[in-house]
Length: 134
Image 1 (tube, one colour):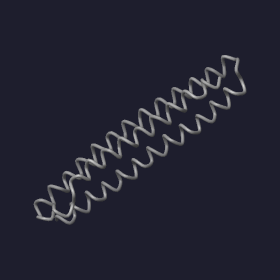
Image 2 (cartoon, helix red, strand yellow):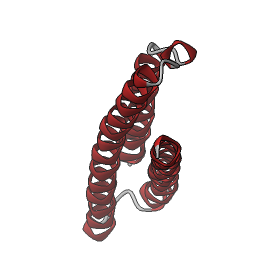
Image 3 (cartoon, rainbow, N blue to C red):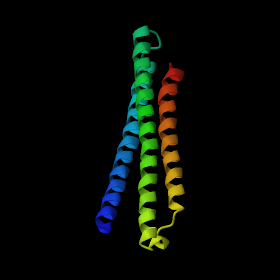
């Protein structure tokens, strides 16, 4: 039974990693695409309220998607922490905990913070640069 639980937890960790990767790539790609679209719109039309309105709609989209991604990453971090803590408890019970360094959990948290920072920075750049160009 322990093997089945271990397999289930490790598969959950793999799924968690795939989900986080999708969140990160989606946010960065959306931010970069929106940066290009809004920058192009800002360069072509320095006057006109309709262009400005469309740019603001893209800004709202960027903000919403980035909030969803950041919340998703924070939940992913919480899920990973709980799953790894479960593995550690299982490893302790089986007396094999010496093979897994618990400091890895701290490394995972730093990595999540870096991912959140990248998403936030690309979102801010995608929002601010077009308005500067305008």
